Image 1 (tube, rainbow, N blue to C red):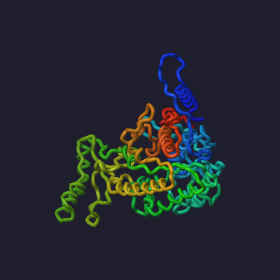
Image 2 (image 1 turned 180 degrees about the vertical axis):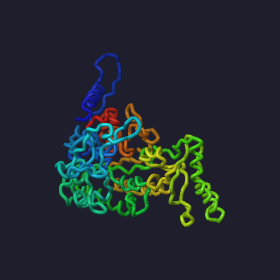
Image 3 (image 1 turned 120 degrees about the vertical axis):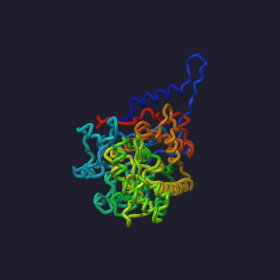
Image 4 (image 1 turned 135 degrees about the horizontal axis):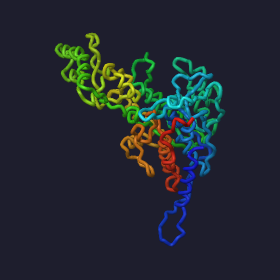
Length: 492
């Protein structure tokens, strides 16, 4: 049971606040209004989305994080004014990871924990931690109110067979192992299983993966690469999103939707600086000697009119005795001089964003002796692609929300406030700083339980605004301080 002691204390405190003082001190204790649903019908709440809806954290899905997912927290508050049961496809343990017929499913490992220096798999600190959730042997029985499917893109929610186990082995895959656990049949879709429950109220937060996959691949453009994950075409997104909204509202259901955060503002892309390499004089000199031939080739290209002086300066690699040497990367947007044997190297600038997993590889020579491939960095050109797509997708989301008269959460603006450290809640002011900020889990992408609680409050505020409920005015937003920012390796 989640946070029972703390929730009980919070409710007791609210109870005291809601009562007038019986003494004669003359103190003016505010009497809060009674909680009301306004014109919202929370009797059957169904949440649709991806990992942000499911409660994914620390690189995986695990039970206590699901229990503290944003929709679950919202459902707890809905239950105070007519909301029904909220069933989730809980994992079997708090280790996370997936098995298939007793064997680990590649790419779906256990959760991350913090060893005091960096995130590591829980099994490195707790060898007894075991993955026990098997998508072949022990899937739970639905229906499920939380239809969040980690990894799902907008159009995946419409796809029949997205929960068919055999589709996991297609190339490309046509199924998702998390939906395999949840699907009512091998031919159903996420939206079909949601609508079969006849929701009276829904949340829809989808679209993040339509740009995030591309970002996590470092903007990989090679269609033959295993990292290739393109941004969803605008027409595909528009069709999928409008179909989801029209389907969900066809029976008169009310709802709340959220837009897509700026993925380049999350810790996964903002933690590794562009110049993290400390070098002594001898090491810097040795590296400079190693790049002397390359730098000489740039001068040859300039002399023969192949490069401008500006690009020569941009591409020249120089190290110094310093604590802050810039990383060396391969930039596909530079002038192609491969026919002259000159690679597309340059040193990073503050405008480049590096992926979080690189942090552990820099001491091994990545970014100095080993030039960084495209998969490790988002260049300004790739960041612009992501921004343009995000802005266009968000315009569609806002238009659909307005057209269907739904509550709307501007998650994009919220993330920017987190990044700037300007989103207080109660006694806390969460930020997007990695590990220490409190909002993001150890994968640098997904929120902590406290971050999900913060988001739940934002959803409740948006519902208040649209449907006349009064979660905020009645003191029924949640106290985010009762939710964890991390979980120990001993929790299994």
